[in-house]
Amino acid sequence: MNKIWALIKREYKETVFKKSFIFITLLTPLLMIAMGVVPSLIMQLKSEDVVKTNVIDHTGYIFNDLEKALNDTLSTGEKQFNLVKVPTKTMHSEDLLNSQKKLIQDNSIDALVVIPANVSDSGKVNFFAMSVSDYVLNKSFRNAIGKIVIDRRIKKSGLDPDIIQELSRPLVMTTTKITKQGEESETGFQSEYFSTFILIMILYMTLIMYGSTIMRSIIQEKSSRIIEVLLGSTNPFQLMAGKIIGHGSVGMTQYIIWALFGIAMVLYGGNVLPISTKYFNFQPGIFIYFVIFYLLGYLFYSALFTAIGSIVNTDQEAQQLIFPVIMFLIVPLMMLGMLVKSPNSSIITIMSMIPFFSPIMMFGRINISNPPFIEIAGSILILIFSTIAVIWIVSKIFRVGILMYGKRPTFPEIIKWFSYK
Image 1 (tube, helix red, strand yellow):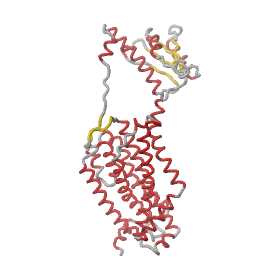
Image 2: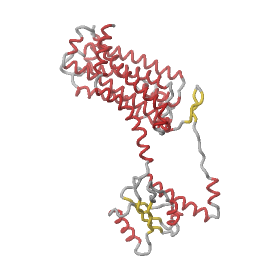
Image 3: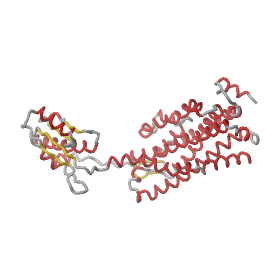
Image 4: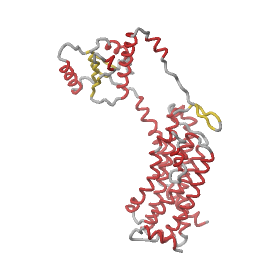
């Protein structure tokens, strides 16, 4: 046990005191928040540029109402939308349209809106611009013209638009999550998705990162023959255990730091960054499951990475074998949308019981829907027994593979290693 402890301290110190470890530990939480929140914040930002728009109104009645509807102002107090009505009788309609398109190409105007005479019946309006990907701009024109046309239809039918609007006022639905412990505060898709996304991405990244670190460490020590020196004072199982537990402890150190960061976000994030309380919904008990599935997932996958490291001799050879292992971790990410939408569906439930997927899938289910405890316990037990089986198999491969040099062994040769004593 003393030898294993010495190896654990060696692996731990070599990793924790690197500048890269400190950098990644501090950067990862900020990066996860940025990936989840910044795109939404950017979408909500209001442009500070005046939108110069020409309007060809073949109806004769929409332009004036449109000017009143698009009355947004910039921070300077200037109107955001500068609308100009284009006379429709000065030239042929096709020539008129081409001349307006030329103004867009010359950057004289930003956009052109063409409202056909039969817009009330067709419900179609043409919008031209150098870039039509501005969702906020498109929505502003679509909603404003749409409301004008709808009000016109209502008036034409003899009904009162104000009464219709009052009768068709949309409902506001609050969502409250019911758990075994009772009710939780109001939640929704955004908080469920982003909180799950952040934790799953951290789990995914650390499983790959520390598994790959063990693999590269073994390859490096094999190529430099340091591993032969280590085996002079330890046996292969002690060496494997020291590496796996040592790097796992590094991961736990990171998680403790990230947990403190997460607690600070939950307690004080609303004061510093109000949007954080909207997008993140962490329950205290989730961190316990997070640690459980990290430890089990790490032991399971690090054993697989250890096997690859002991078989190959170079990083290039490792890349050929590492892809299937990484794919087992990528599949749950591909299923994240379905996981959030239907956490208790048959396929998600089955995947959460399969050891290759359960560290991420079951943890995601716990964060979203609180599945029955028997399913959680079953997933954990299956993962524990699978991990023990994988470690036993890998130890057989490791004890022979770490001293094999030259050509990479074939699969039949690896099978023969199990008979060696």
